[in-house]
Length: 171
Image 1 (cartoon, rainbow, N blue to C red):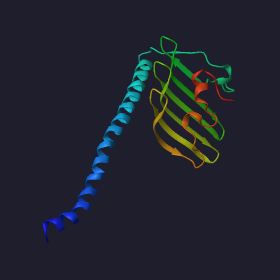
Image 2: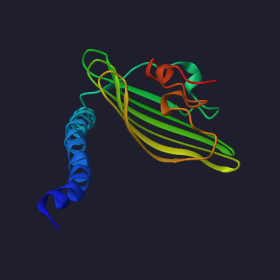
Image 3: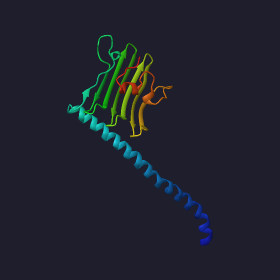
Image 4: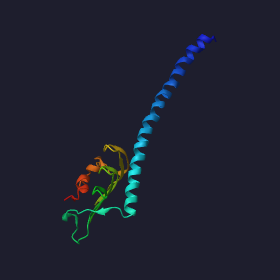
């Protein structure tokens, strides 16, 4: 076999193996940006946890509707020294219906990390963990959802995360 014939046979194979490498080289840049955004969200969350542990967060007033019939508060909003809500915890438990949400916010009041669970008479509806960047874009969501629960965590039925952030409970 001549070298020119061998080159003609191997050229497509070499081209096929080099093209994925070129596109694979672009992938780490994208992954790096995503990783950096996730690291920043984790840092913001760790900072809020540290503020809570050290007692540097204080509770904000929430709506009267945020108490159950026994008088237990269902919503807690903890703020920093600038009165920016940094940690929101909501829990509603009714017979056969349970919703729980915890949100960690950065110093500008933007949601950066959240966990949410809900169940009903037919079992778990969702059990999710979500990370957000500084622009509010969803970086990553993990967990389980029952079929039909495709709405992003912040917009789940009976949750209304933005209202919780302002100290208002869902009806």
